[in-house]
Image (tube, rainbow, N blue to C red; front, side, top):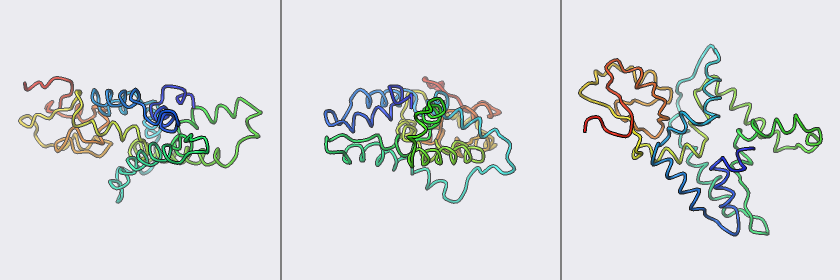
Length: 235
């Protein structure tokens, strides 16, 4: 995965946690905390390339789009479990004889590396084709499932899997960049809830952990009751 060389904070975090010489990186954790405290999940809505891919896939016509289902809320907790187990605990404690851990999330789960690195690498290098095995097919299966699910469910990777989104979600309620609801203007028409593809009701909590700051609710509001930014217009 090209991102693993330096641009993927989750890959970088695992590399340090799994290294016998370090175990913790104040630089990476500090960067994540800084971005989270500044913008929350704005990164998910506007900067993530895989989020864009999922957005485009969801635009593909399909006879039935699934907005929510019985265990949707429970499955959203899965990304926190993945963050704790595959990003932190396994790389830290499941190590080889040299004391080195592996980036287990990148290696076993993340479909982005497969899409951006695994497939192009094998297609462009004949010598690599003879080296592929179970892990390659496993990651390929996860990628295919993610693509298919993205056609019928809005951003399934972001909702249920992504550990980076899990980290940034903790900062949504306290980030400098916020969404704000003017209750005096709100007419309770329900349009903001209807257009939210993350299944949030902005009138109850416009800085919900699942909010990716896409601004659909803000743009749909007929009375401009929802605003966003750094400063509170009411002050």
